[in-house]
Length: 198
Image (cartoon, rainbow, N blue to C red; front, top):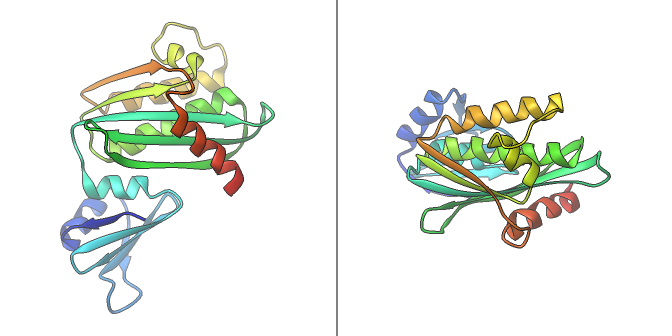
């Protein structure tokens, strides 16, 4: 549960500028509340507390990190197609964890889950205001298709590749690299934990 030390009035302006509706607080101590993507931000004196299953977007809008992000993603499907989940880890340039998480995404193929993880993590990194991203994935297919080295014959994946490329344009600089599963261990674990939580 992220706690962001900030001026609640300035934080409210940031959320409203991002198109997020801000409502009155539920108690005398709450300045305001805002909801987005399954998470709720609650403002108190001098801080905002973000709660919920996926606090990345709200936290990103409120903090505006800047700099370089290292992003690790993984998608998994049990059955292919079958129940699917994604995991992500976003680190600062000096290795500090900005946010990490995992969630179920319904039933789909393994390759589509890999793309969904990539899209979700890039949306969060963009919300955090990072200038550049270095993405690591253990899906060779997704990495090579995004880089244009392999064709994307599946219309579903082609649509997602377009979305990934659109998201990359939000950064001054980006890279995407295929890594072995052991390098991507944390994102893989978070995707698998999401199956158990779901």
